Image 1: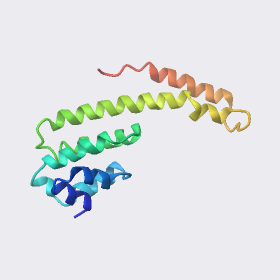
Image 2 (image 1 turned 180 degrees about the vertical axis):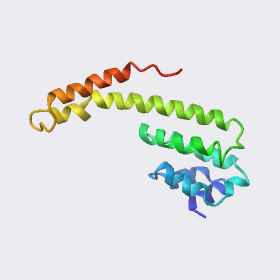
Image 3 (image 1 turned 30 degrees about the vertical axis):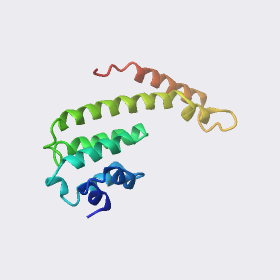
Image 4 (image 1 turned 60 degrees about the vertical axis):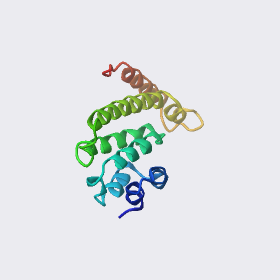
Length: 144
């Protein structure tokens, strides 16, 4: 049994969240569900997932977590009341955030710095193409 699963099984959710700090969503899921404790009581597992997800600060990690744990609310955590709705909301919010973040990166220094004269590993035309693509991405109408 992993330390994360042991902590969740004993109700030490905050300690389990701390233990999961820095791990990828797939690794967290592997460690969390390996012991099978979720089959006995899903509530602490649901509480862990929600608290752990709240602490993720990268939109990319949030999207990966929404994908992995969205699936979990259809399998390992399928018995959690309202779990499917929560997972769908999580997925939509994560997708909105990652699209917005990606757009900002495409038109910001993550791209433009590579076209600066002192670096010049990217042409200004190519950097301009990234900016134009970000503007097209901004036009995408996402469901509300």
